[in-house]
Image (cartoon, rainbow, N blue to C red; front, side, top):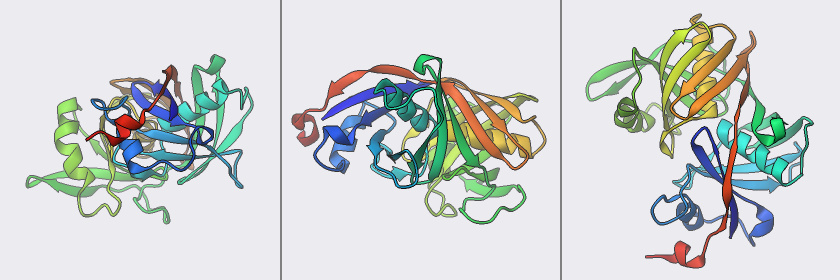
Length: 276
C-alpha cells in the first residue's frame, strides 16, 4: 500500500489514495500505519480523494483506533496539500465532503499554508440546536471541572485553566473523553486566555490521545473564547506544535489558516499488517 505522510504543526497524518489500493481500508491496515513502533506512526489516516456528489472531493478520516472522525481541521489542511501536490487543485477555492459536512478550502504559498472554512460552531455536543454558551460540569476523581461544549461537526469539551500543561491533558483528557455524558466520546481542550487576540491550549484528541496541534480543537477553543467575550474575532491559537489563525464572524462561522509540511512517501508491507 502506497502512502504519503504530512504533518500540520506536529499533528501528523498519512494519506492513502483509493487509486493505490484495491478496497477500503481495514482496521488492521489503519492500526499498522498509525502505530509508532510497529508501523510508520501517525495521528490518523486520510482516505481520499473519493468521489462526491456534493463537493469537488470526498474524504474519510480515521483515528488510530479505527474510528471514523466527522472532521479534522489539520487533517483537512493536509488533504488539501495532498490534492495540491497531485496537481488536482491550484490556487482556486474548492470543496471537500467529510462525514461532518462540506468544507471549502484554498491552498496558499506554494502549498505551505491552507485555509479551511470550518463552518458554524455550535455550543452543544449535538448537531441540532444552538443554545447560548453555558458551562457544564464533569467529574474526575471526585473533582468537578467546568467545561463549555462546542461542536465543529465533531464534539469538543473546552476547559478554562490558569496554566495548561501536557501532564494535565494526559491525565484528565482520557477520563473526560470517555465520560458517560458524551454519547460519542469527546475531544478535550485545556484553554488559557493570553490576551484579546491570543489563546493557548493543550489537547487530548478523541481516539488519538495527546496531540501537539488540532485544527478543530483550535476552532472550538477560539469560538468559546470569543463567545465568552474574552477575545476578539481574530484569534491566534498557540499549541505545542505551533500556531493556527482562527477568524470568526458574529454567527460563529469559523475559518482556519495554518501551515502544512510534507514528510515523505512510502509503502506498507503485508508483513507489517499481519505481524503477530
